[in-house]
Length: 281
Image 1 (cartoon, rainbow, N blue to C red):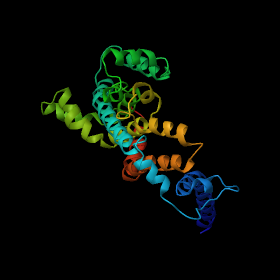
Image 2: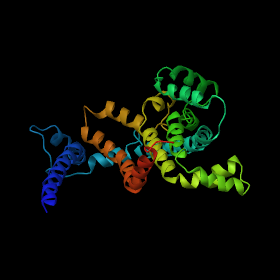
Image 3: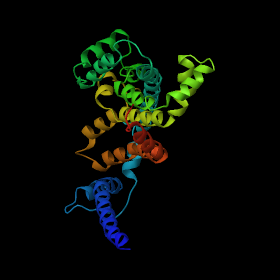
Image 4: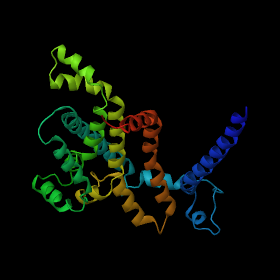
């Protein structure tokens, strides 16, 4: 009984702390949502208002209907580019991770170490060569430039390799006895058991590419291929000083797909992180 009584206050303190921390994190988001339903005069009023006096959808309608913004088109472009990039990363990284985890060849660990070193290379160093390559391939201002560069993701190879090394070798030996080769072991044994890790990697890559601003800003020029982060940056530079609720409305609307992804795949994200963090053997 004493131990239960001593544990209860500790849990209460933990819950109170986590609640306050959650409110601290969520408060700026709630302010952005609230001010997106305000008029420009209410947003600029001092002291600032938290709840709109007369809620209006004027800013939301302007973002969705104004011809030089096309938020719906930018959202579609971001979803297409992020989905294509995620698929390319999974297709390329899974076989590479299997090779480093299961195939025994001279220099395996050394080559993998060199591969990890490339993570420390800043993206700005490879910006000009990648841009020149896109120009020579005539991929500038196309979805190809948004999908294929960087699809050979080193982080993805590392994450999947760590998980593949945890899969018991007994399962693969049973497949070998049934006549399965390397591809059969990879396709019929490793991949079905790695669904959580693949899902977690896919979500991480999707969210990163969906929010990427730097590379799409360099390789896209037209309204038809512009992604959502680039469009929001232009929206902010054009309307932040004149009509802030429009900028906030664009930011709130752009965050909805991310929230949906988190809500749907929350369990897979947690399971994938937990399993891949256990280490190889």
